[in-house]
Structure formats: structure tokens, C-alpha cells
Length: 573
Image: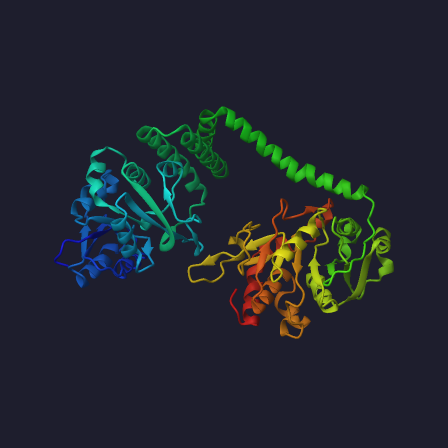
């Protein structure tokens, strides 16, 4: 360490005692074949952050250099980077990491230095990172982009990578500080992009912590921060028409989000200000956006559902035609008395498919007499509907439990009883099955969010109606959209196919129980691309009072079922 450092690790921190040790450990874990230095600036923390830095400095005096302020510099509008950190740094390359972020890959710095050494036309190397949401513990990649060069226009439109991911040539810093450009990270990366190329590597090598950014107060603050950033871009970079248009669109939506938040908070002053800013920014776009949102609401929530209901009521019912498929297709559903009045509409939509099933079967509990069902439902038996009143009351599980046992060699497609399925519904599921014969195909899927340790995050943080096309064990097929199960994927002799285990662990959560069955058998789920993952509801106000979705999701009941299943299956989701 008597040699001049090749790389300076630079860190600014303030009141981050819960995180700073992990940041420093990320520095110390780096495996490099060149000298380094670690410079950490503490801006007069009051929570013990400085003491933690000093303890590391005492153990690594030749490596770590602490800068300890007695008065907070930020509050005096003094840049700690310009005045304290950069003047002390001696490396040919700088790697930055704020005191609440951290590096996770011990080869990160070695890899980035190697790239810049071998590619002199590049001025900055960046890599992908995980975002860690500190309020939920969920992680997700910062970017899904492949390896590429990041252009100046890319950076001016939106942020492309976090600070903890970068390593850049230090030679340009002196020029940057003299340029009078604003000294915040994205503005600096943009300046560097005017001096050389920027390389993005999709390897995830750091973690970027993001706090509770969805509070209403933070939305209001962010609207003004976004405006300031927009003004800076326009002042210093003379962006192209394309960039200005993209930035103004982003700013408009930030204003709108802040305006809505201000209304929720009862903050009339900021609500008026942000509404005025929206209109002033682009009167034309304000009107177009308002009309578009109103149009989409009425079309998607009112007109299309009403037309779907009217169409199925007026439609005649096709008679189901037989086929000679080697693996017959059985559409299976269940219902109960409060839904019998409108059930015929759902089943008509299943019988009127452009691609016919070999069987459409309604499974009911033993106590229901077929002769007591509504006449319009009984009449559908002449069109191919089969009704089985053979079931124990295992609630939504009835729609797959009996069909899979009765038709072991068949493709089982499950449906719900309170929606109208589009004509191409079954055909789309079958087309997906032909492409992915070893996967479960579903038109509506949720994606499990993950915490940093890999465990499943709470259900209400999952990505609902996920639209990625790759099969995954992290996808959960949601029954209302329709789910296709290939033959022989489950073992009917296993404990998970015993009624008493279903009843005691997840009686009202068939989607979750099935997900654990899929984990047990290592069967992935694939999304079936479609415009309406959730079919239109049958128009009957009484149906809204009978569903399980509100109880399970809104009351966090799903998380209880998940815990039950993890215990029963001895397997983490």
C-alpha cells in the first residue's frame, strides 16, 4: 500500500450506521492485483456512523482514510465531493458507492479495471445492480437490458444505472469540476458521456437501497426534484427534440403523481401548483391525457364488459363437437348456489369456443340435486355440458381435484364460474401447451417477488398480471384467467392429493396449493400472451360479494396460506 493506488474507492455517508459496515465490507472483499485506497467522508453523523468508520480505519490504517466533519456540509450547501473527497483521491480510476449501498461481487473492480484498460475509448464502466426496497425487503434488478453502450441521449432521458455500479477514469474530474456543471451523479455521467463511451455489463455486482419512495409526501417532493433535473438538462446539454419530448413526458407524469398525492394529503397549495405546472408544461398533452384516461376507463371498465355480457346473452349455444385427440381436453369448473343464477353465461362462453374441448364438466357438491339447478343451466347439458354432483365441499379445489383423477390421460383446463371467456381462450391455452408441453400454461399469472435472502416476499408485493413470456418457477397461475395442466404432472397418490390436507392448510387458496404442488413436481408456469388476462366479469352485483379474492389478498390471508403450505410441503415458496 506504499504504492500509488490505481483505484480510489469513494464513499460519502451521513447517519447510515445500520448500513455503513456492509458498505465497507463490500470494499474489503474486492480481489484485485493492484493497489487501492478507500476514502470515506462522514458529514457529521449523529447516530454513530463515524465511530464505525473509525473502527475499520484503525484495523486498516494503510487502506482506509476517513474524513470526519464536525459541522454538516450539506446543510451549508457545500459539496463534499468537490471540496473534500475528490481532492484527496489519488487513483487513476474512481469507484463510487454511497454509504447505504454495497458491492456484492468480489471481482467487480478487477473486471471493470480490466475492461477500461483494454478499451481506451471508454471512459466509464458500469454494471447491473439489484434494487433493495428497504421497506419490504424485496429485491429486483435495476435493469433488464443486455450488454450495450449507454449513449448521452439514454442518460438524459432517464437514469440507467446506480452510483454503486460505476468505475470511471479520474482524469476528467478536474475538468468536470471547472465546467460549472451540477455535481449530482446522473449529470456527471452525462458529462462523461460527452468525453468517451460508457459500457454497461448486465452482471449484477452491487445493491442499491431504495427506501419508502411511494409515500404521498415523497411523491410531491419528487415532482419538484424532477422539474429541477429537467431544467438542468435543458440548461447544460441542449438536448435533442427527442430527449426533450421524453423528458417532458416523464415530468408530466411526475407532476400528475405529485398532484394526486397532494390531493390525498389535503395539501391544496401543492395540488394547485402541480396542476398548474401540468397544464403549463403541455396544455395539449394535458387534455389528451385526460381524455385518454377517461376513454380507457369507460371502454375497459364499462363498455367492453357490457358488450361481452350482452353478446353472450344473445348468442346461441354451440353443441360441443368430439375429437380424436390422443390427449383429450377437459374443461373443468365448479360453482355453488349463490352463483347458479348466472352460471349459464359462463358455461355458454366455454361451449362457444373457436376451439372445442372434448368435455366441459361442472363439478358440484353431493348435496346439490341436478334437477334443482336453474333450467337455463340444465338445458346446456344437451349442448355437451356434463354435471357431476359427486364432490366433497373442498371449495375452489373441486375444479381440478376430481377431473385430474377421473381423466388421468387428459389435458385439464380449469375455469372460474363468474366470468365470460373470450372465444379464443381455449385455443390460446392449447397453442401454449404445444409450445411448452412440460409447463403449466396460464392466461393470468402473478410473479413472486423475492427478498434479498431469496425468500418469497408478502403476497401483496408480488407483480400482478405479469407479462414475461419465459417459463418460470416464480410464476403463479391464477385460476380466473384459465389454467392448462398437461397430463401426468401430478402424482395422485401423494399427500398433497388428500382432501384432509387441502382442507386443513389452504381450503380457500387453490392457486397457492397448486403452486406448491408444482414446486413439489418441479413444473414451471408460462404466461399465455393475451390482451385480457382477467376475463370480463358477469354483470351481476351479487357476484362481487361472493369471491375469495378480496378476503385472501386484501386481508393478507394468502400469506397465512403460504406459511401453512410451506410447513406442510416442507418447502419454501
